[in-house]
Length: 386
Image 1: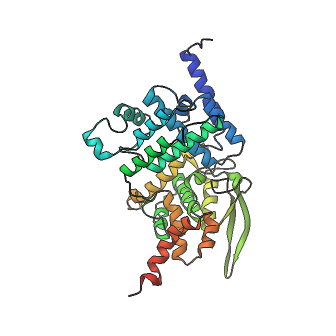
Image 2 (image 1 turned 45 degrees about the vertical axis):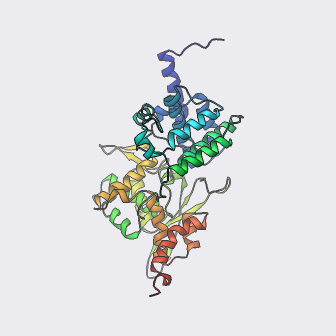
Image 3 (image 1 turned 135 degrees about the vertical axis):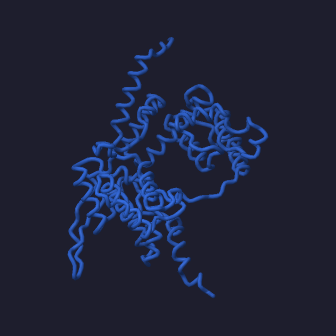
């Protein structure tokens, strides 16, 4: 049976339908550039995402899968002129590695080494490439793992464990050494946070919102930007005030966290806010007239508050913008700095690591201690033997 080519009108109808289907899962899977994704992803891709949402997969995992799937589709179209095949042949997997892990020095003498210029230009025009050079090995491994996982969900077998692919990755990583860098060069500790909040004093809606974002993200244990952007009014529960001797009781609020990559399927976790962060959050909810749905939303130039949640990237942009306004170097700070900054500040104040981890919800002591120990080692006795 010959398949009839899609006309322009039928193509528009298909894209419109995919946009609507993606909108139905936006509360769980907030995505920017939804219209572009609707053109890029196939019907089966969208249906897979909808199925995973219904199965209760964590929003952070879904967001990562969607991002990787969109990139893989865009790369396949740019590199081969065809949509991503299922299952992918070994040759295509090796091509993916060759396009993303290459030697910058060899590129100087061999222009054909690495990702072809025309493929790179297409991906950059679509917003999938923002910098030149080979990709981070961890990013390549993660996207291959996503590709493998999606292949298995389709009931197919791929060549992801082939000796040739493993060898290609190993040799490529060895040829492109990259120093490990933290997601945020500097931690947003208490003193830095005070400077960022100090730029939110004009009383505008943006100031009220950004102050609440900064204080809530930090005080709730350094929440990930995706968790902050995806926070909903229904997750907030007012608690009994905390009594303080010789002073007025402090307002208290609990946040019922959604599932994350570190929480179990039936394990919805709770973190608490006390005092000033609660006041800042309540101030934004009142000013923004947020009665239900997404807590942190976009604000247009006329001061209108959107009904949709902020994109996670916007949280990063807010941290950098406030750093610039505070006279700091925006390149040195990011949203992840709030997470590392929380643990660093906890160490500076002598709060035991297990207690700090209860609020940050880190599962790995080793990971949490990377931030915590840097502060305690710097001021500890071991660094003052002379």
